[in-house]
Amino acid sequence: MENQKKVMVSGIQPSGDLHLGNYLGPLRHWPEMIEEFDCYFFMADLHTITVRQDPAALRRRTLTQIAQYIACGLDPEKCVLFVQSHVPAHSQLGWVLDCYTMFGELSRMTQFKDKSAKNADNINAGLFTYPSLMAADILLYQPDFVPVGEDQKQHVEICRDIAERFNGVYGDVFKVPEPYIAKVGARIMGLSAPESKMSKSAPEGCVFLMEKPEDIMRKFKRAVTDSDTENPVRYDPKAKPGVSNLIQIYAAATGKSYEAVEAEFAGQGYGVFKSVVGEAVIECLRPIREETERLLADKAYLESIWRAGAERAERTAIKTLRKVYKKVGFLPR
Ligand code: ATP
Ligand code: LTN
Image (tube, rainbow, N blue to C red; front, side, top):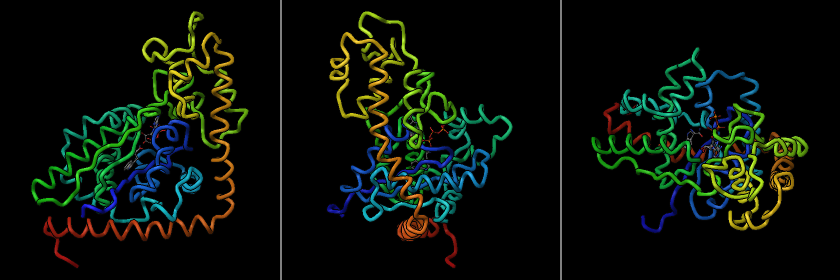
C-alpha cells in the first residue's frame, strides 16, 4: 500500500470555452502531476447541464476540451482522460451521496448562491445538489488530492465532510482527499473588472485559449489599471487590483517571481507593461491553440482516447461503487 502512487482527480465543465483563468489556475499544473501521480481528468458534462445548454454547442465544447487537455500536455498514455457522462458510476454514486448530504450545507455553498442569482428562472435541483455529484466524481477514484482553483475549495471541503459522514456510518469506505491549489494563478481576475475572477460570463475581460493573437492583445491593451504614475508596476492586490492581476498573469505565464516582474518594469508606464504581458500570454497560448486545432482535425483519434479513458476510469470507479452499494444494503444483481 505504502509504495503505491498517490492519486489525483479533477475536472472542468465544458460550459464555455477554456480561458486563461482555467489554464493558469489549475490546468497548467496538471501535466507536471501525471509523471508523479495516477491522474484522472475529465470533462464535467453532467455538471454543465445545471445551466441550460445548446446541445450542439455542448458537444462541440466537450470535444474541443478533450483536444485542449491533450494540447496542454496531458499525454493520454500517462493519465486517464474521459467524459464524465461516459462513466455511469458518477451519477450512480451521486444519487447515494445525495442521501448523505444535508439541505443546510448545500444551501451555504457560495457557487449555488451565485449561480441561482444569475439564473433566477432556472434554479433547478441539479444546481442545488451539484456538490454531491462533484463529491461522487472525486470519491469514486479514492484520490489523495484534487487540484482546482481557489473558488472550488468549498466544494472539496464539502466532499470531505460527506466522505467523513459516510465513513462514520460504514467504516473506511472513502479516502478523504485534500484540495491542491497552486499559489500563483489560484485566482486570475477579469481584465476589465479586476475585482471579480476572470470568467467566461464576462467575455470582454476574459482571454480564451483559442482566441486570435490580435484579439488577445486588444484585451490586454484595454485592461483596467489605475492612475498611479509614481511607481506604477507594483504588486499590491488591495490598492492596485488591476495591475497586481497583470503582474500575476505575467509571472504565471513566464515563471518569473513578482519581485523580478516589478524590477523588470521599474520606471516604466502601463502602455509598455500591458503590451509585454499581452505578448507573453500570446506566446504561452500559441502552441496550445495550434496543437488543439491539429487534434480537432483528427476526430477518430480523439474518439479512441475518450473510449479508452472511459474504460480505464470505469474499472476503478466500479470498485468503489460496488463497495458503497454493498455497505448501504442494496441486494446484488
Ligand atoms: P463559471 O464562469 O461558470 O463560474 P469558470 O469559467 O469559472 O466557470 P469552471 O468550470 O467553474 O470555470 O472552472 C474550472 C476550473 O478552473 C476550476 O478548478 C476553477 O477553480 C478554475 N478557475 C476558473 N476561473 C478561474 C480563475 N479566474 N482563476 C483561477 N482559476 C480559475
Ligand atoms: N466544479 C468544478 C468542476 C468539477 C470538478 C469535479 C473539479 C466537477 N467535478 C471533481 C474537481 C473534481 C468546476 O471547475 N467548476
